[in-house]
Amino acid sequence: MMALFDAAGYAADPSILRDKFGVSAQTLEEWAGADR
Amino acid sequence: MKNRKVLIVGATGRVGGAAVEELLEAGLEVRALARSAEKGERSRKLGAEVAVGDVTQPRTLGSAVQGCFGVFSALGAGPGRGSSELVEYKGNLNLLSAARSAGVEHFVYNSALMADHPQAQKVGPLREKARFEQKLMSTEDISTTVLRPAMFMETLYMMLQGPVAFVPGHQRHPISYISARDIARAVVRAFQWKMYGRYDLAGPETITFNEAFERYGQGSGKRIHVLHVPLAALRLPGWVSPYV
Image 1 (cartoon, chains in turn blue, purple):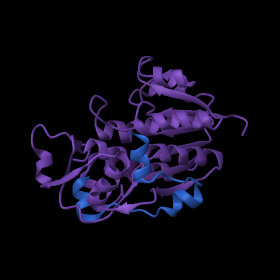
Image 2 (image 1 turned 180 degrees about the horizontal axis):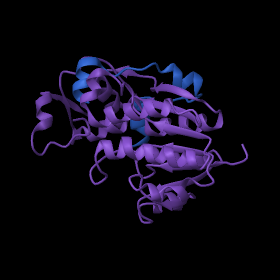
Image 3 (image 1 turned 60 degrees about the horizontal axis):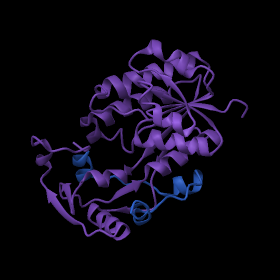
Image 4 (image 1 turned 180 degrees about the vertical axis):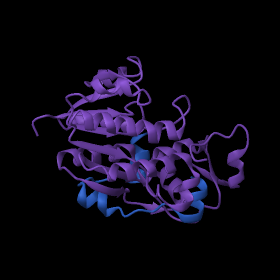
């Protein structure tokens, strides 16, 4: 998978989770902070 | 929704485990499929019913799906769990067949972003996920949802060895991240709101690995150094990575 990421990235539209599913997703900082 | 029971397959994994918690929290009934009662113990303690079975053994699945309106598959191949083809493709086909026979209404599948990308076909788990997605989406007698999450935030842990993050390749392209917990929340919505179809799922940030580890460091209060290593290093003996 790393080769795929390196060649093509791995990006998706964040609005689907937020707007269609109504999920207010964690940021990386929030997620890492919750694990402290 | 009269019948509120969902069978979760892959309940001992990151996404499946979070789904057990989130579905129970949302007031749904959960039955977790586990390969042994011991492996199902965590789900049982959370309040789920446990069915012992194995997706590679079709005869064990009939009673597991019986009485459920929904199935959530977060199956993943891995050490001790069989090959990608056996688990991700054939195992899910067995599960789908059992679900259809039992009259399950809704099958939600946790796939992966870009599973059908040409370059992803060299990666066994992605290739088999794409194969199963195709089968699932062409099945007409059961409602289906395919969730295609971006990279799990939890994977960042696995790239860390002490204060150093080993990143194979230059990785100049941006990556989207999502936590297992947020995927599980989307699974709840898929069942509650009857959301059918195929959806890419990502959290709010699409950034490079270097930026991701910087934010991880800020959030965790740890100082992290990113070291890029050649992609070929993934094939060296002793290298442990989920991203071969």
